[in-house]
Amino acid sequence: MTEPASLPVVHTVADLRAVVRDWKRQGLTVGMVPTMGALHEGHLTLVREAGRRADRVVASNFVNPTQFAANEDLGRYPRRQEEDARLLAGAGCHLMFAPTPEEMYPQGFATSVAVAGPALGLEGDFRPQMFGGVALVVTKLFNQVQPDVAVFGEKDYQQLMVIRRFVRDLDLPVEIIGAPTQRDETGLALSSRNDYLSDAELAVARRLNVILAEAAAGAAAGRPLPGVERDAYSAILKAGFERIDYVAVRHAEDLSPFRDGVVDAPARILAAAWLGKTRLIDNRAV
Ligand code: PAF
Image (cartoon, rainbow, N blue to C red; front, side, top):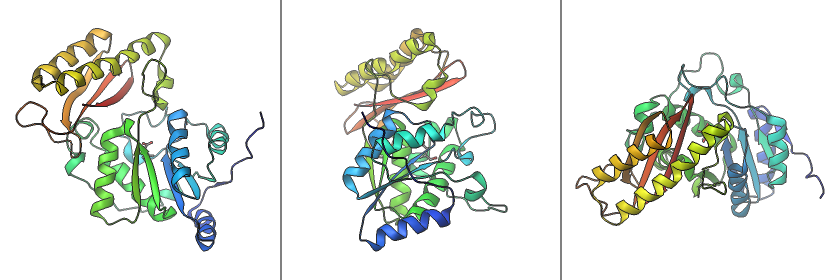
């Protein structure tokens, strides 16, 4: 097997723009995959998808401080940019943009992007900082790269809905593609935060998607949602999770609750639960 050629990496917006300008001058289309690094097969699937939809692919690699609250895992979030660049090259990426925090948020930075609608509730209740930070950094990345298309994973399903909404609301000229969650052979959703888990915790983590799939089947069969959610909640605790932030069935598009307590339109079951200091999220279509 031959090693993939090394990947060009830029760290400043000026250098990024020079490369993208040159591509656009040649009439090439640009796809983008925003990431926080610590890449795994899930991210690489997004890069390949972007490569199918555009002539050139940029992946950003930036652990975005504005989406972490003070008590969250910004400091211990895994960082391995050299390895990331190697993986990206192998997946057909053409450029990695790895800005510093100062490049993204210069002294005196004073702007925010606030999203309501699908950002309210679920993650929004437990990580109130999160979607403002995501909307801000993704808006900036889109302005910097000016991609024709951007690909995000359904693993962060609420994030995907929030991004679709502010892209529409702000008339950002980029097509948003959602790609299915990548799972290991047991169904565990691939996540950079799986790196934090011990073997014993991994065994527990692997139960989450099974419980959500069973709950989704019950909801799809017309079981009343309070019972579906209550049973899933108990099953997640019984599996060994220590704490649950939420487990809820919501409308697939805007994530609003089902008023009549049964599923009568496309739906999603979403959950966030804790194993030690690690918070895992997952979701399944109903
Ligand atoms: O999903 C992520 O990794 C991040 O939230 C994103 C979209 C790269 C913004 O920092």
